[in-house]
Image (cartoon, rainbow, N blue to C red; front, side, top):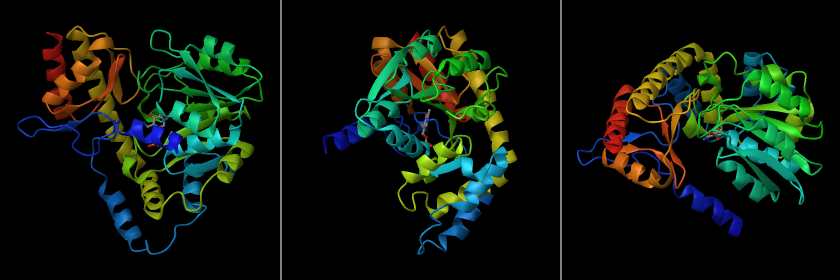
Length: 352
Ligand code: PMP
């Protein structure tokens, strides 16, 4: 029970829908790295059609979606395991290693679910501080010992948007012992434009202890339906499947994800627009005098220290919800141009 409360306490910061509104009613939600676009008509149609069957349980093995993901990425279906959002898949990965005494290494600050999932699974978190907002892979390699069973590398990193490059990641993977599972959390992979940032799927093929975590929540715009997956070698995918609850991925999520893969070109065009806006927002912030780490994700990071909550409050007055991490900084998602302009205006007046 106490551990359950811990999760809910953390989620209390999460506000669905119109999180904040300006006095004139304007409201921009830039706090959860969601897609700013409405679902595609073809995806809505698939959901409407799927809705006719919700009196029935979904396909427990999500076979059609598993095969669609496998085909899309050119991997065997036996290497794919789905879950209700990639956070659930991450939880299942923690379950697979979860024994007292086990250590899981990850950078910090990174995705806020890692410590919660570690607590739930009863394993020990080993947090390795970021170096200049980036993963310190040398320090992470040094943190691995006989008790380590899993390492998360979040690439691009949430909330800083920073990346690890192919050569440094390969050198790191060469140092990780085989008994340690490396999870490349690539929730924001589709937004990467830096050629030196590897696609984890090219790294997992020759490495049985490496797997890649991806989601339909961000670039594919299905955050509300909860579907994500891991691609890893058969023992990893099988272990994840063994920890799933029956019917974890619901029918509407399955059909919407299949329709999204079929409409991928349209969705990736939207991702391109977000990437263009990311460049515009970052450049505007830099010209306002802010220090903004280079970002390859659909958000920017401002290290504000003690000013973080004041900054979030100032944005809220302008109707812009951002994601503050008290005492550290704020993460601001890239939205549509109007939302981004509202945020830039709030940032400009705060800087003055
Ligand atoms: N990994 C990272 C790095 C994330 O930022 C998120 C969402 N914030 C997730 C995983 C989980 O996403 P979802 O459960 O919606 O797939």
